[in-house]
Image (tube, rainbow, N blue to C red; front, side, top):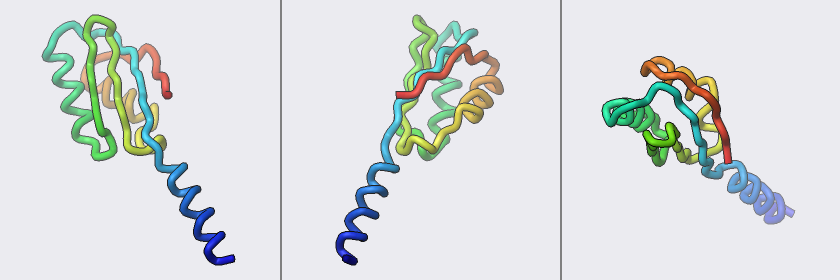
Length: 92
């Protein structure tokens, strides 16, 4: 019984700690300095594994360690404080 309980707990723990891909449409980015500024802000967050900025499509792609590590409000705050506007946030 203890082994079964432990196995279920381990499976639930693994399921809750999953990476998440977040795509953010950002208005106002026009140059490589814009991209570097946004990348720097997100790289400072320990749960962010990867950050990519595509200026031509105005998309910021974020990969987190855990799906619950980066709330939409925090994403919006970081981008807004950097001087840009968030058009949309999509999670996969």
